[in-house]
Image 1: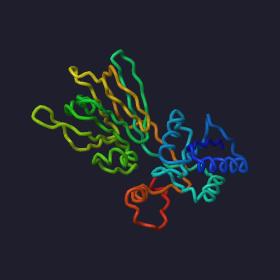
Image 2: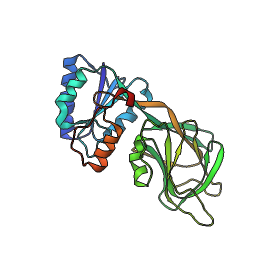
Image 3: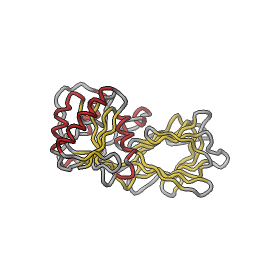
Image 4: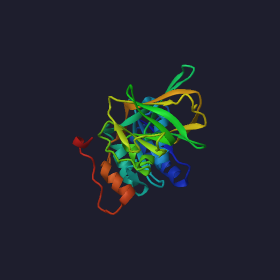
Length: 279
């Protein structure tokens, strides 16, 4: 098996990296940072997001697994103190995985150029100086005219991030859906939007079109941890991606256990492993 190890810039992460390297050598695994079959993230959720985007063009052939040395670790299944157990699971890897839906973001510019991106957590579009104004379509039908600070479109696993802080619902990743939540929308006699989170089915999509009299300048688009300015944009389309992310199924934690562990943390019993029926 070909293995890549991505790690945060801390001494503990580097120490764990070296121990994983040694375990791979003794197990006969090949270290391959270019075309891995398994990408190991050592750090927190930020490190895992960076690892995902490093191999986002290889999602049909790579699995991911996270070992937690960071601050939150929602995506990481193993703690630093569990390194021996992790290395034992790694040496006995059987190729099993559990998959989650992803978000596809397509940006069409005024000159006809079209660029596609993919996100594991969410994509947010925001204007930091002044308000953002755009038409929102669901499939081909106009849904509302939005004015406010911005919008967040999240995957089910990303629903626990910015989406949750905006009052969005936490969504189980077995649901193939994306969720849109508004960021400080303006609602009065002139501007009117739903002002509630909404879920989009797998066979639907969301289109944002800047109002003609309001050029989308000074607006920034985020894709997980990545940010980019938007200028001369004709429209942005969001949909459930055809691709899915695959996590190695050594001891993959049940989604609600992850939520409880990250946000409530009142139970100290061992978290249970997913059954095959819960993939």
